[in-house]
Image (tube, rainbow, N blue to C red):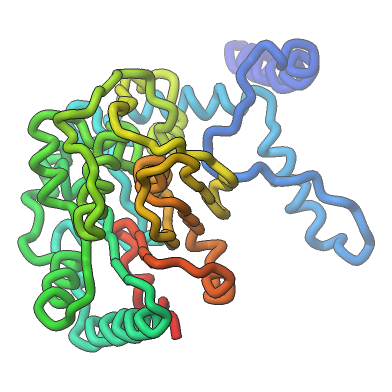
Length: 362
């Protein structure tokens, strides 16, 4: 009898879920926090009849009644009960800090442990690409700077789980930076030491996100401006206002943005923006700015960037008369050649430095 009651209850739940969702679903959160686009409803056709069932199943699964709520319950159980994030690409660190690791994104934790060092051939391949780029830009009268933003675990190793151990003394980025500085005159900015120093006083990365916050981005920008001979007020002279965070991609990846989001964010002011004006702001496209006031450096800046430049953009653009920052997914040499910059900056996060094997300007 008890088994029949359970079966009946399960059957009623399944049958009533869809009607109840249609009537009351708007009262529940339906936003997708999985950092991906939900499957679109497929269009039926005889030519695609074999693929249609699987495509429709994917569409329906992404719109299952109470889907987000069920995912969140499951994620919460794994995180709070079993102490394990529901997404294998997220690491739960100490003091509820989250870290990122993905085999599809160059294994940042394995790099932290000193694995997958560059071979001599790979170092020479990257060096050749960068020297060709430098020479091609110099022929056009353009300065070239390589800027590498440190991975989060490089700055906060003490907050990783203890079983990962101390950071390796020799690792891919350190290996490449040392090689370039000892064997070439390429200008490399890797503000690891500056961030380690700043973190003694300030929080410089988000607790629940892969990126640095605005304080960390300001420290990185100051290092870049120093290399370019441009004045930037020191961090200690800035006015820092605490505010609520707006991004937490790692918490989103485990569907726990709401329960975990007690992080802090910071806004910085107190530097002359020279009347900075935003002309274009496309997340995976182009950021274009100009300064309408006097006092900004007259040189034009062009940057190939990733998401770490999102917090740097206003700081960096405020220093130059004109700035154009293009996301790497939208960049092409043809796109660069449409501009006439004085400075070319290639900005990348540490975990993506392997992409330098495929980048060069000729």
